[in-house]
Amino acid sequence: MARTPAWCWAALCALLWASALALQGGMLYPRESPSRERKELDGLWSFRADLSSARRRGFVEQWYQRPLRESGPTLDMPVPSSFNDVGQDGQLRNFVGWVWYEREVVLPERWTQDLRTRVVLRIGSAHYYAIVWVNGVHVAEHEGGHLPFEADISKLVQTGPLSSCRVTIAINNTLTPHTLPPGTILYKTDTSKYPKGYFVQDTNFDFFNYAGLHRPVLLYTTPTVYINDITVTTGVDQDTGLVNYQIVIQGSQHFELQVRLLDMEGNVVAQGTGDEGQLQVPNAHLWWPYLMHEDPAYLYSLEVRMKAQTGMGPMTDFYTLPVGIRTVAVTESQFLINGKPFYFHGVNKHEDSDIRGKGFDWALLQKDFNLLRWLGANSFRTSHYPYAEEVMQLCDRYGIVVIDECPGVGIVLAESFGNVSLQHHLQVMEEMVRRDKNHPAVVMWSVANEPSSSLQPAGYYFKTVITHTKALDPSRPVTFVTNSNYAMDLGVPYVDVICVNSYYSWYHDYGHLEVIELQLRTQFENWHRAYQKPIIQSEYGAETIPGLHEDPPLMFSEEYQKNLLARYHAVLDEKRKEYVVGELIWNFADFMTNQCNQVLDSV
Image (cartoon, rainbow, N blue to C red; front, side):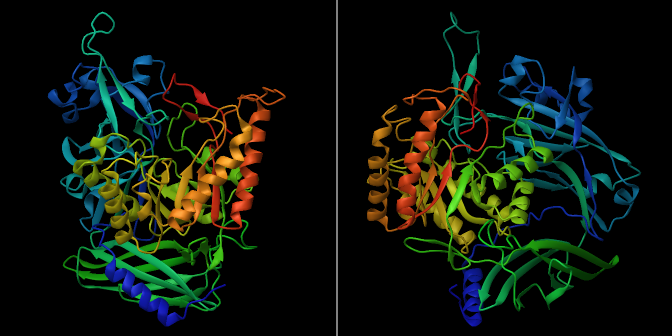
């Protein structure tokens, strides 16, 4: 394995940190510790859809000012889940507009009485636009359906002898040309066919636009002087692992920090002090992908302990961050992890499941990972949005490599390349990097899937997004997934790895299996000749009806799928020896489409 001297790594990390954009505010996963508690708010919430024609009745009548049941009939809605498939109301399943959630929360007395305690409300995901009130007071707004956001509600719950609080969340799932993903509202004005004011949501992606509180909602506490953020990058020198850390403290400038790195047996292998430094780990266990090493996914624990003197007396905060020591690099023809060539042998996924929609479920998640490892997969792409934080944690734990993709799917209209869309896209990348930057399993950022990257504005747009993402995190390569012609794509010049989707003999020349090898070889050779970059076949496959058999093979038969995949694999195996560094089949499991609401079968 290629090694870099320790002094070079130290200088490189200092250079990367100096050049990286500072992310404002931390988004550490809420973990319990001697100084931190958490209270889950999962379960049944009161729910009501605003069925008024303008979808504004809830705001006009200020439903957030009193218990939601006083505004009219409510439903019991499980959280986390999408609201679409839980009930029997067809109008709710395809509802577009504002829906309202509410939950009464009983608080521990110490949270409301101890002014040295900070109480935070955290929403794991609210799709798409969310407004939050606590006891009728506005505390937060957030745009984007797949990333967490928080609100410090300490002052609202520590103002008197309160033992409970009312959390109200209004969510709007409407997509516009400037949201991510984008969409449009189509108004049907022919009153001979449609009722007055009738409209539908139109999108340029094929999955159903599930909506609701998709991930856990919780309260957690920290001291009022607390560890706000931790950033870790890692390197290797010979057998010594290098863990570079930066720590941000909020609430005071007068504090002490102790940092310890523990191995999986609980032994301290390195320690330091201060808010920035490097820990050196002799004979380090590296974080390796699944099936790439006999001991994959080795995780250390970075323990950070803060002590501060305040006007209310001494305070301590304690946070533990899992750390995997590994390196990532890209050459003209290889993707390297720990200096060794890595081949993405994996899948694309969705978070959809029956009834729950995109709602988080531990049992389903564990089953997915058991299936991934049973298949021999070592990687997946988060098509086409960031998955739950708990998904990333299991990837770290099991050695499943991740291409972390933002919700940039369906960017096909010219107006979706304008400044409004661009600024929101940059914000989404900041939030995604902030959340996932410390996961060793995340080896590459993807900023979009199948955009109209041959349109004139696409060059500047993707140059800006990719440059911004690299500035946020210089330690990882950046890509987007294209299905454009190699000679016309204006965004690919700025990526580190070319990711190409193609469905030869399925969406093109359908039924003609005999042309696959020629077309696939031509695709790879054209892209690599033009850009001299490694290539991933980021989507390929064919739909199949289980149990349908036709010989000679016909489309939708099991034989057709098997024959198509065999032809793809023959070329992939050939080009793997040159510059192809991965293949991700479409798709790992069922997902709900937005056409006729049918379910696609897994490949």
